[in-house]
Length: 568
Image 1 (cartoon, rainbow, N blue to C red):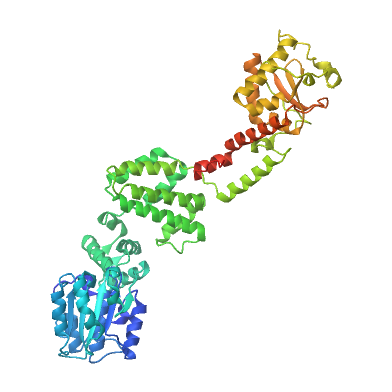
Image 2: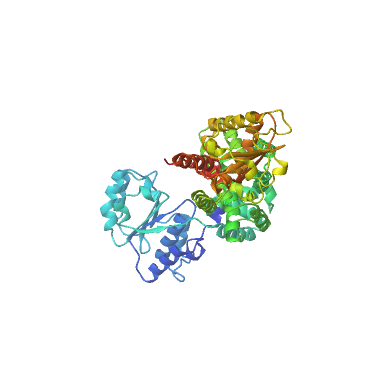
């Protein structure tokens, strides 16, 4: 007997043998059992899922001389003729080759005559969507009211091309893609019958490559057996089918985790040198990230279509990623796939995308960002609350003053800001009045006071809000290496002693004075007057709030991750 390919040799012969379409097989058997057969059926679905096979089984079942449980016996004369394709009652027509109105007119003439044998005269039209509009219109009347001995069975992969006037005259059955487990089970059955040894990983690779088509899976099975012989291993078929090794995807996740750009670029070179199709590679990478996400989200690997060895690896690697990070990685992979379709340098796009994955910052959950923003708003709205997130670690300067080296520039003091230090400073034994110069300099007291005014003016040039707060404060005392500033209230105290302002003033004081002084801030009990301009203080507070909000890490993250902008 001549060799037959697996798809033809192991074509289902009974309703029970149809793989993955039990809902359709059961409906057709019940229709035969209750004598509720329609005069027209249309089978739609992807390639290789059993549309034509089901049509042939139905044609044999309604004409079989000795049906077995409403299945054809495949032994009677009529069943054998249909199986061998020489029946005078069953006509299989290719819609692509017989698409004109003339062929439909001939069909209309032929349906008038009854079957030569059996009960029904059956017309199976494959790829019926290829018929022209005129041909469909010519078929309408015959399809709606055919003779009682005629049955039409249409098959199509593009149901949306069928006119609604045709669909409304037919019973429609939608065939689904066959699952990987069903394909693996069928291929294992065939291999056992053919005495071919093939491991489960090889069957899984073939089933995934078939993309839901049993015919494609059987064709790949024939190709693999021709290459490997009767003992098939998964390692042998990977280069044959040019499939990306699963280990490469795990190497990518390790590279992303380690932030190793060099290893990532070398891996791209390896992918190119092996001749992998970049679209197939990216599709596999998206599936890889999806598998990690499923493992992380569900806490199990039941939804993953992979071998047990890789399922264990997914459980281990899922611990190192968050759901947000995986979604971002999938988004980047999708963008790369879209970019290389029409790009003349697909390798460059792949390298840039992989580097972007490696350099990706840790994801910040939006709920955490919103909570931090709410907390920031509360702090900014409080008159004595903390203005900056960094100030949480700074001690209260009223009990433990912050000290540091600060430089100053000449200011102009108001009369109420010059304080008699003898009556205010309890530690007067080691300090100098404002009229006395510090021991470590040759500066006169007038120079110190003048440079204080200059410091205020210098600060106002760069940061008006901070300069205004400094102008509302008073120079209390100067000793060997310390410059003490008196603040009118807790708000000024917190602002001047925050880390950011403290170090800024320290550098500016060194620039203005020419030597280092430790900066000390405290609330002055002798400052009985408030700042001369309350509106000025309010404007300074608003300006400082805006400036500091923009520098806050939460706001920076929102601008970087989501493109946030200020609403005026």
